[in-house]
Length: 65
Image 1 (cartoon, rainbow, N blue to C red):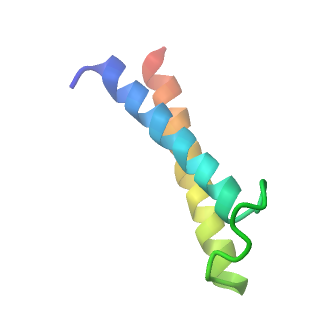
Image 2 (cartoon, helix red, strand yellow):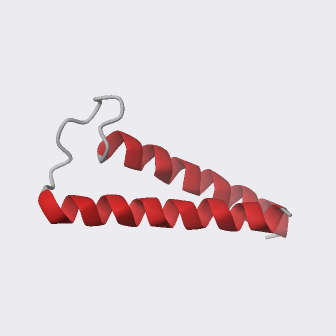
């Protein structure tokens, strides 16, 4: 796997995770009312997804340069 395809995969995966985090945990489009978790677990999952997505997008952007 070359550097370009790795960066494309990281950016695509990170973007998908960001969209998933927005829809499920932030209720951005009111598609999912209740993701089935509440309280502290919801915050941990949402924050974890946001962190992983940010790392993926940042790593992919770094590999592109």
